[in-house]
Structure formats: C-alpha cells, structure tokens
Image (cartoon, rainbow, N blue to C red; front, side, top):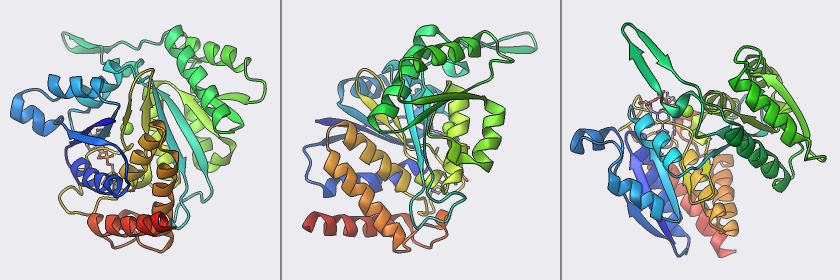
Length: 330
Ligand code: NAI
Ligand code: MG
C-alpha cells in the first residue's frame, strides 16, 4: 500500500519525522512517498498545493499530513474537499499520566468537512466583505449518518448535535432537522442537541455529558481545539478525515511557529494520527500497539514540555520506539 506523506511547515516536519520513525519500526507493507505543500512550497513554486501532491493524495491508499501554516485553507481544507473526505473524526481521550482537566474523558468530535463557511466563498464589494455559508441536506445527512454509524461501531451511547439554529435559521436549521431525522433510525443511541455557545460552557464544566459530538465545519474546528484542551492539549490530539475514498490523517494542531525549530514539539498527536491511519488501512493490532507504546511512555513520566516534561521531540520518540519494541517481543 502507498501512503502519500506531506510533512508541511513548522512542527509539521518535526512530528512527521517521529511518526515515520515509529511506523517504520513496524513490519508493514507500506510505501511512504513524500510530497510538498504549505507556506514554504508556496514561496518556492508559487503554489501551496502543487498538482503533483494533489494527484498523489488521490492515487495513494492514504495521506499522512503534518501541518501547514498560513496556507492551511489552500492546502488541507482544499485536500479534504478534493478527496471528498467529508468526516473529520477528532477524538479527545485522556491519556493516563497526562495531567489534564478531565482524566478519564473520552469524547469524539465528528466535524463536517466540506461545507459551511470553510468552503471559502468570500468576496468583497467596495469596503465590505462577504462570506457564503453553505449547508446542504445531502451534506448534513451524510455527516449525521456517519456520526451515528461511528457511535454504533464504537459502542458509544449518545450523539449530540451542536448548532445555532435559533440564529442561523436556514443553514443550521437544515443541519438540525436532518440530525433529528437520522437520529430516529438509531433506537439504541441517544440523541440530544445544544446550541454551540451553551455547549462550550457544558464542555468546560461538565464534559462527561458528551460522547459523540456532530457539528458543522467551523464549529467543529473550534470545538475540537476546545475538547483537546480538556484532555491535555493539542500535543496529543489526532484526527482522521474520512470519505468514500482514501482518507487524510492529520493531527488537530497546526504548524505551531512559536515552538518550531526548537525540537520540543510533542509528536504524540501525529503518532496517534498514524495509528488512526493504520486502523483505517486494516492494521488493527499495529494501531493498538502504537497507542499502548505511547501510553506506556507517558505513564512512565516521559513527556515533552507541553505536558510538563522535559524530553525533546526526538528523545520522546526514541522512548516510544523502545516501548514499541518491547511490545513486539511479547
Ligand atoms: P497551532 O495548532 O499551530 O498552535 C496552537 C498552540 O498549541 C501553540 O502555542 C503551539 O505551540 C501549541 N501546540 C500545537 N501543537 C503542539 C504540539 N504538537 N506540541 C506542543 N505544543 C503544540 O495553532 P496556531 O498557533 O493558531 O497556528 C499556527 C499556524 O498553523 C498558523 O499559520 C495556522 O494557519 C496554521 N494551522 C494549520 C493547521 C493545519 O495545517 N491543519 C491547523 C491549525 C493552524
Ligand atoms: Mg483547527
């Protein structure tokens, strides 16, 4: 199987090195092919997402993506749309050993990935700017169904839709109505809904009332950084973009220019993202092993600075690989 690898900018490159090192430790029949995209690529070729990179992502069995900088809209948002990877699955699961606001929390944000304000339909007339928010019945239906099917498959009990249908009556109205309709088909899974603003308060004060969250593109982007913050931050938050075809796997975080080049980025999010990719490619055991190696490393107190530790990216990666090797032996 072929994996298109896009390290990108800033810490994207640093954490990608770690993830590839971990993946190469496993004896898998995966071929990693590296491609360029992002701010540096734009400066070099005048294009943030070269055609060659886009074509490679379309043809590969999966894309493993680090992070880009200011060109995120032209690269990752475009990639999701081009590959019609309509569901962005963003788990927020507390890892034992990580000091966080809510130990034991395990929720998943399912974010619609192809519509909403992130479609990028913005224009200016004189001194005013406009943005078009598109929400379709078809798009809402497939993400709602995905969320319920995901809940069913993962043995989760509840799906919560987040929207703002009291204000955005038409767009959020469609999303809300479709979620309600789809929910009726799933007797075993509870359904409820909140307005996005109240949901943010509940997430901070009582996140255990949530299980699977389904929401539109921009709300999902924002809320998934929030949920990451509940369990220890962006350093440990992975994600998968799933569609009918091949998926794109990327951490929730961006290029983190504030720490780039210092060798202190936490590669956990990227490594857990690689595990999500393995699972989608059918390598269940190997995915589990990676997750176990990460948990073991962190529970031994070996951590990067964002989690209160003092290990550098490479040292932490080395420890993860050591634990992975121990798991391989048994
Ligand atoms: P960011 O996610 O890059 O960083 C937010 C904060 O979290 C920073 O303080 C950063 O140091 C910290 N952080 C993030 N990942 C970390 C990790 N693995 N280990 C330790 N600390 C980590 O978001 P920010 O700062 O708003 O954006 C920086 C650049 O990234 C911007 O140019 C933005 O456009 C881009 N971006 C790209 C995304 C993508 O490629 N998917 C997503 C989000 C932002
Ligand atoms: Mg984001």
